[in-house]
Length: 258
Image: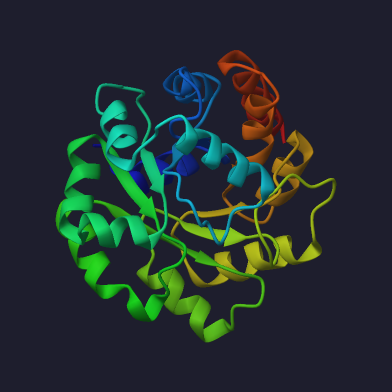
């Protein structure tokens, strides 16, 4: 297990903008090759989606990717276990919904992640007020619980989210669900600045990061970006690990040159 926050801080302190791609676990027979491809292309960490049948945060692309994975027989334990044999050299962060955590059991789920090399978890439908039971189990297992902040998050609550988040703080660029976008809302840059003003923890912005220019623009007011739907759309349209790696490489090159 790699310490998520220490790893990202070290990359940031070395002068790098952070890039975290998302991969839907179980999407196709070569999905673990996709994980290896995005890491080889320059990812600083990798977010692994554990599909759930009723996602509340995911837009059409991630929903389609998740449903296709579920239709193919993907299970939470199968996805997590499949990554236990990989040594990609960057932190892995699970993204899933509380129903899966609850049904598995807080401590059992946290231990399953830790035993298979995961460093963190994002559970977007658990609000700050209902976090303690999961966060205690996660902390005990060494799993960083990454919290999300939105453009309309009040200042006082933003401070509490940044204080309680572990690994990094995930800024949601728009109110709504994930998905590819042609342009980014001005609220994304404003949120990045607000978060950076109240925490030294790494700040990443996601939702709609679809092009290298998007990555550069958002990273200007944050420490980096998370990109998801554009990658999964490429896979859904028939692309392979190499194609997804090429998209990530383009973002990496742009961030390094900015």
